[in-house]
Image 1 (tube, one colour):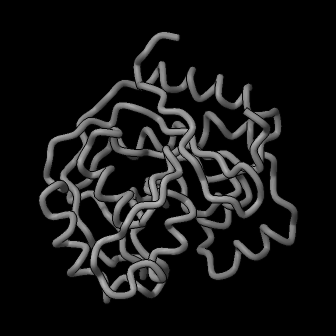
Image 2 (cartoon, rainbow, N blue to C red):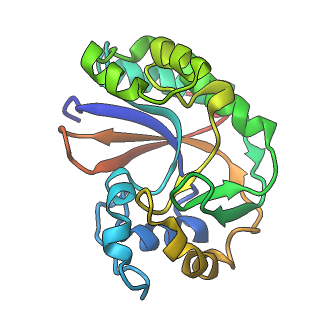
Amino acid sequence: MPEPFRAAVYYAPDANDALWLRGCAWLGQDPESGFLLPPPDVPGIAAATSEPRRYGFHATLKPPMQLRNGFPAFLADVETLAQRLQPFAMPPLRVADDFGFLAILPAQKCTALDEAAASCVTELEAHRLPEDAAKQGKRAAGRTPAQLVYLQRYGYPYVLDQWRFHMTLSNAGAGAKLLEPARKFFAEVLDTPRMFGALAVYVEAEKGADFRLTRRIGLGCAK
């Protein structure tokens, strides 16, 4: 594929998982196929989900970044990392408005999730092309000392011990009015047993484009 503007490593449910199907429907787009989908019958949902729709249904592991060494080298190292990681059971999930936006969160702590995200952040860092000082300065506003350290080291403040698994469902400030409709919409799928079995590579083909899921790389699989 042509060199993308940015690439990221995300968690995405399996393509046949009802959580994936409902998450894509809630946001109104399938980032794997690129198809637009009719959203649920919830007043104002299209406007309230515009930002997460652009990024696609996911939980961030390695945040979006411009690549220092090109996409093929990045993809090869994601494959190597995925080969080393082993699948594990996901915890039950819940819908909440904990961050000022609506998101799907773990209902209990899961050390394996934290470790998988940390591995993606640290082991793929060599591929990140650092942002310029102006962009870093904008990200630095209002951060804690620990977050500033991570921003300087990894280009993003919410990594390692500052990271929390979340699958974003609304724009900032729009979570409260969508909370109950979202809980009803996702109620049947949040407690379903599921495995964390793959790393999902998403790309932004050009600046401002919607992110697309281009590869699902299974964990523990030999090349």
